Length: 457
Figure 1: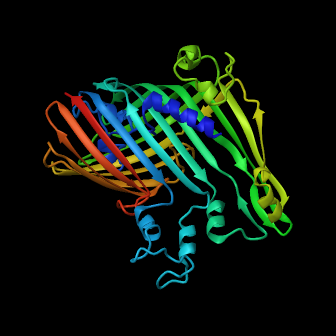
Figure 2: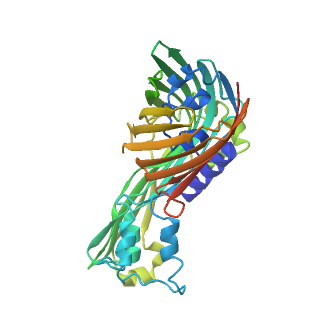
Figure 3: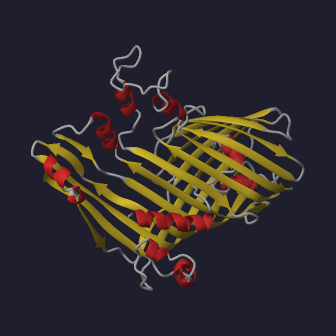
């Protein structure tokens, strides 16, 4: 399996030099994604296409350079690392059996409490709109880019075993997860202005480059009086080449005094069919594999009609005592793998996200924004947990806008962002940094960085 993961990683690196998820520009990132109402031009695509109807704010723009990078986990922060992995004041290791000051909880119990029940997860991301191929004019826009999502998780039981020992008559869950997804998208967006509101839509062609993931896993590891037992399993599925379609819809009001409101559903229709021979990856597979032998790396048959594969891995152990374990470690686990049949085409739904937003502008000094959002699905870059975001943008000095925001809920729990820009007559440059899982650099469990340059008229 490690060979397959390495192979896919190399291929993805050659394709994009990075990893990503659903895109927002640096201005939106600085506003902590409270962007349902205030996004404009190509930045409205992917959030609320109805905002293309505000041509008085922006008639034309094109991206010159745009990138968004993120890295996160759901457990470790700088504060936690410095607290337990750099020792005490004298540099000596902390005794985890001791209790925290003014608490009945031990250091060990505190560390385990920080790990979610569904395990320790880590993810990476980069979203790259293709330079020069994201353009808006009037009420229309065409966009294109590469999006990649990656997340891996380990069961909480592994950490419990390390910290608490291998206790008799206790079982540890062996379920793991892994998701890797790379998709290129090409979209056409439009807005229809009415007297008091705008409506808009985006139609996207999703060109799937590849995906891999553990679509089922489970079993447990137990220490019984008779010996060690295990019945762990996981099924690893991968595919290259896919065709798909996604549709976004949006609505917003014209300004009502200083207020404005909007809502949108991204990927209200969204799917990709993977692994068949009716996509450009399959049609050009000989050319691709002359550079990168992708199917061999992913252990997919090189037969001309094969573009997907699935393998079931099992890890079994029964009544293995200490003597057996020490005397024959090479066969401690009975590891087996079995090729599982996959359908000619694997259909994947693309995650949908609901957004509701409002903004208030105070003269020419600042704008306050609020967003409420949630995924209609619970995988890849979507989460069904409700997320509320509040942000403000200081616009008194129009050439140098300053932004900040906070968010609560959603997949990270807490987020904070800061951002700034340099806006000239025909050119915008913006940069932003967002903390994930915490409100400062020391408490955050991840960061997200965005930079973009745009030409505008």
